[in-house]
Every structure is written in C-alpha cells, then in structure tokens.
Length: 229
Image (cartoon, rainbow, N blue to C red; front, side, top):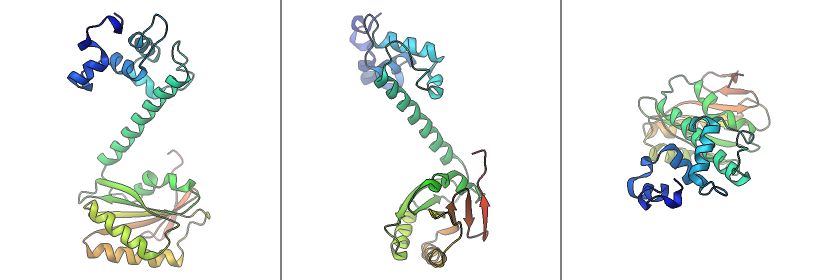
C-alpha cells in the first residue's frame, strides 16, 4: 500500500513521532531518509527496492556510488545514503574505541595518532583514560598557533580535570618529517607531566608522530606504524 493510502498512524514520519524512531521497520527507516520516490513508486516502495538491491541495511555500509545506481536514487539521494552509512561507520569506530582498555601504550599512536601524520601544522592531542584505562575522551588541545608551553599546560590540565582523567597520553605531529623531540618538546613534556601530577593525573607517555614513524618519550625510541592499519 502506498504511503498516501496508509492511515496517518502508520505513515513512517507520523509513526516515528508517535511511537519512537525504534518502532520503524528497516523499510520505514529508509523511506524516512529518502523522503520521496518517483512516478508510481513512493518512498516506501523505493526503500524496499533499495534494500533488496543492497541485501539489507548492512549492505549500505559497504555500498559505493555504483551500488546505488538504482532507479529513483539520483545523485542527491545517493549522497544522502552514503553520508548515513559513513556516520554509522564512524559512530561504530568511536564506540569500539571507548569499549577498549588501553594498557599497551603502543596502541595509542596506532589508534589515535595516524591521522596526525597528514596534518601540515602541529597539533597537540590528549587521550584521557579512567582508572581502569578505558577511554573517556580524546581531543586536540592546541595547534601550532599556540606554541607557548604555558598555553599547552593550561589546556592539558583543564582537559584532564573536565574529563575526570586518571591517566593521559599526549601526541603531537612533526610536519617536518623529523620524528625526534626538540629541546622545547622535552621541556614542555616535563612541565605538563609535573602539572598533571599535581592534580593526580599520570602522564603515561608522549608520542611524536611523523611520516610512517612515531617517537615514544617513555621508550626513548622511534617505532614504525603497522602497515596493515
């Protein structure tokens, strides 16, 4: 039955408002996203055809523009569906990070530092963990227009307090490609570590990311990123 002929309480939008979004079937959810169909094919029909073509909602996570060359799915709808899929993948990735315990320090640059390799300006990132080494939050606390150590110290302490951290890691990148700490890096790390200790937060390590390598202050050495990630 077409949407126009359905009683109001069974139309996807009205049903979602009245019963909650979780009450919708896969077809109804997709119809709500698509919003419209084409001649003699409303949003519900188009949603059903799309799910059949993709072998269900899970197929959307693996879809590319070629997979979405379905009658009624033009560029705007295709981009909307791909955007929804990308949002789902990013949410899943983030949730996986928050479920993990990070007791192996060398997981930190692999998980949280890879994107820093491609930045053209220095970014200082803090990874904050609870007392069980579970992730609370990770955020960029300064960029290279804030080079003063006192700025980084203040930002680091504020972030650690706001997140109720027990342990933290620092990461920053060297766009120069030189994966070794400068004298300023060494001094700043010591000052930040001291100030965090005052509030009961333990700085476990500071990693410098550059190219395909990262340097560990705690390990006093450089290591290569894993190729399969």
